[in-house]
Image 1: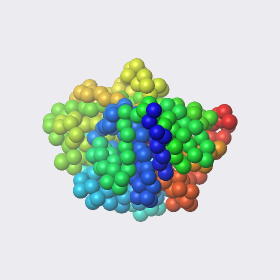
Image 2: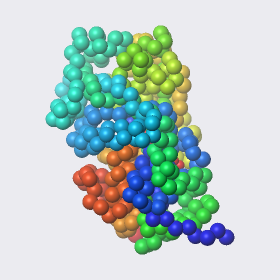
Image 3: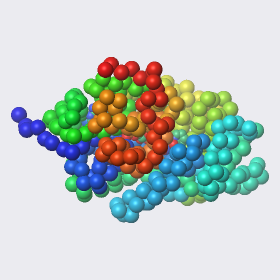
Image 4: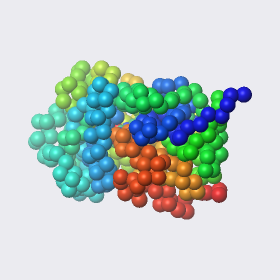
Length: 388
Ligand SMILES: Cc1cc2nc3c(=O)[nH]c(=O)nc-3n(C[C@H](O)[C@H](O)[C@H](O)COP(=O)(O)OP(=O)(O)OC[C@H]3O[C@@H](n4cnc5c(N)ncnc54)[C@H](O)[C@@H]3O)c2cc1C
Ligand SMILES: O=C(O)[C@@H]1CCCC=N1
């Protein structure tokens, strides 16, 4: 039988959040192990794929504030790794006139002096040809926004972690956690002992937390990641200057619709609905609901006449939603040496560097750089069922 191995810290889950957390711990001279259940890279969680939107446009000040530092940390990673991870495109935000959420986005951008432009109907048609602004909608552009090259980013941060002596073990599923002043972590291959653990297991968070007697009010949904063909190649391409976009609360939908310019698959534009149907993460492909695609087709027929209104490619990804769609960044209520990063609710990628820094601070018992009250577990109160 293999000897029990010891680490200062073990991070469980090598998606974007676990990878940045492990890197940050290694930067703080902690002997760190990053465990991943699947062979890396894989496409079965929430962090795979080539692109994600990065933006400062948020309704809540805390996110815009965190993004200030995130942009700097993304740039630092680009320099350290010698790869381009960010491409500025701007983010076109469209919302119904007098809509509370849209007004809040605008106000928050203005309060934070984020470079942006307001588009009236005439300017909209000049600046964003081949797109129709829905009747009664307003539009603005967050000029700081753009595309993150997601799969490159994860590879880069994992390589930086390993350069600092960090260890990644993939194809090693955590099967048990025994809390205590020293935590015992059992996997499909080994047993480890460590002073502290960080759980960044994405859609599997509650499955892992069972071992610690905690369940969070998380809902896992499958997202149909749809790519739509341009009728004329490059009409909506990154090279032609087409921006990322978000349509807040579409005319016939309760959730946002968002898109990125064609780039990763030439001639195909990624446009998705910001909600999906519930799934067990281990049974993702059994969830075959496509009602979101009907909503997207109606939107595309009305607003993007240069796209074929039938998805050319549909891939799968998962969101792990909290009831308020804010993250969980906290210590376990009963064990201060178990730190949890979960519930990134479909908008966590861009925050990876700051999430990593924050979870590392919690793990080291340091005062967090940000006010974490919106992200604390206690906000769920009655909802979180602690078996302790
Ligand atoms: C379609 C889609 C579009 C998105 N668009 C954007 C966007 O434009 N901008 C943005 O900022 N965000 C976006 N997001 C959200 C963002 O991608 C997620 O918030 C982020 O990837 C979550 O990362 P994570 O590390 O928490 O989870 P994951 O990436 O799922 O990582 C968790 C990891 O833990 C591993 N794991 C779980 N259980 C175990 C175990 N027992 N043992 C070992 N390993 C385990 C899993 O295999 C997995 O690799 C999008 C998400 C999706 C799905
Ligand atoms: O986080 C993002 O920017 C994207 C787009 C809006 C909905 C969710 N993810």
